[in-house]
Length: 139
Image (cartoon, rainbow, N blue to C red; front, side, top):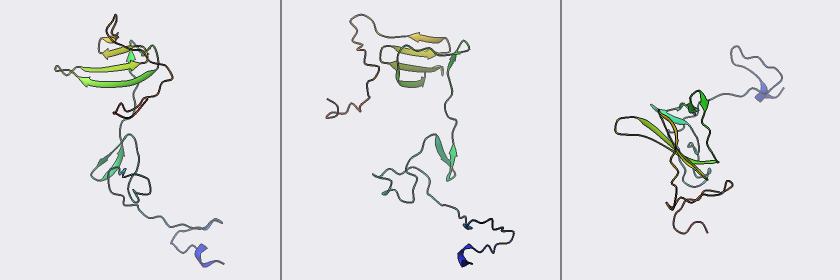
């Protein structure tokens, strides 16, 4: 019998598979994106909806659907971005931009605030891609 496959731990049962030891990973808190995954050896490289509390990674809330009068919001177009804020009276607001409309959602409901007339709102394509907008990027 191969010496590496012998189970010697108290209560260990060999079921025809090689026994593997478990050991804790001590990775420092926070994401490290120095360049590539190989540059971040021994660190968390990527993650979403997590935070660190007292050095331990924890899941945070996640996504929640916004409902208006008991139904999910009905937007015209493909959403391209959202921005949430609170006004000076602590009232929450969320704005949504699609390729053809601009909306603001408050406790009063969804309002179309798309500029009209010669106001300079340029619609985009439903299949457009987003770029950084930094000088030198794009076409």
